[in-house]
Image (cartoon, rainbow, N blue to C red; front, side, top):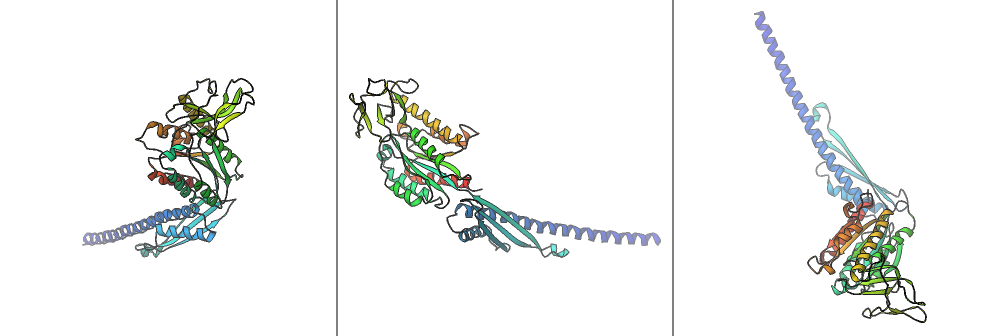
Length: 414
């Protein structure tokens, strides 16, 4: 009888341990479920506050209250409170010159279903994110060569360039404008309140001439070098072209009889196919027919079809004067300026336009443009990596400009 009673007691202890184990397991599973729900909520809230601060920082044209309201609106849209109650708050500030800092915080109490067994009715979930929008110094460099007019896409370029400008901030950013064909022209130095002025200028541009990317990049670097100093500004050059270099600027060895010049700072050009060459005047872009035998001054014409009688004896590098060499030097000197720009810490973005199925002479040289931008670090991993975006037709041109704007805004915001 004694042994039987002891066995009955053991069965009772086992049953109690079993019940305790079951309750413990169920409680552990319940806590895991509650913690899992809280983790999912925390992850979603983290993404929502990230979206909020990026939106507020990137689209910072408004007042501080407007930026804060937008940040909260975007955060709420990414994780509304119909899952769990979430309270969002945003604060925007100006920590340094022309810089916007946005912080979004999210606070919630995730309902606890199983944790109530230990007296916990909810789990506190918090998330916060910050983003800073730095100012931009940009040289906007537009090709206005004759091929754009010939292809009937000049208006499309103007519309896409104007739309591109709307994505930047009149109060924080400084943007300058250069156009180029046979020669480069500086229309506006980098400055704030640029949108109205540059829009009007772009609308008034006209096309014609050759493609002197060499001189355009040199002028663009000068704009960035001389922009009003802001130590935290991101410096960017945006280059648009629909062709390949057909011109370059340099000191040319003429070897003419005095008073005609022995050396002359001019522009050498050639046709898209490399057929023919001509000498042009820097600054004016007028064609030089010859130099006066009495004064040595250049005699110019606005008619590109007249022949240049006085030409260099040879091109830089002792190369003969022909179209292929003009194009090769145009590429080489443009790449040299691009390298100088990137070495200064400035990023280059390039937008190319052209029919990939058309004549090779009328298309942009995409490999060359990728090297100019250091696309993906193709030239140097130690220099700023820009991007080359190609639009096969005018229909895709605005999207190409938008893609570059998105990359720039991403660089401005961190």
